[in-house]
Length: 69
Image (tube, rainbow, N blue to C red; front, side, top):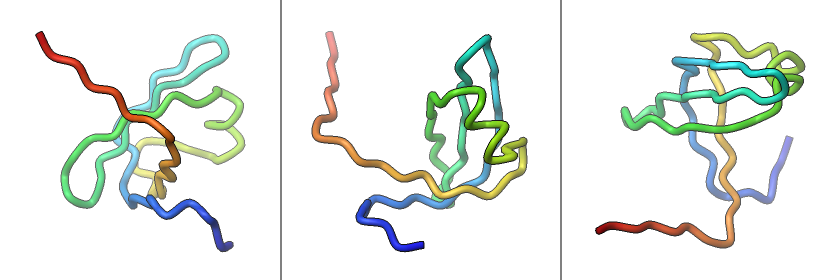
């Protein structure tokens, strides 16, 4: 599959926390950083995600905000 999303980060699922409708999935990127994604619980099930799954995080954003005190 070809995608227009240019920010494609390969990694491995290291943690999945599910709620009633949403799930938080932590992915250890190949460089060692941890990326956190919030997706639906249905998406976790549809993708067959589990700890140890290889994934590609697709990042498409128009804004990244940071703040410090």
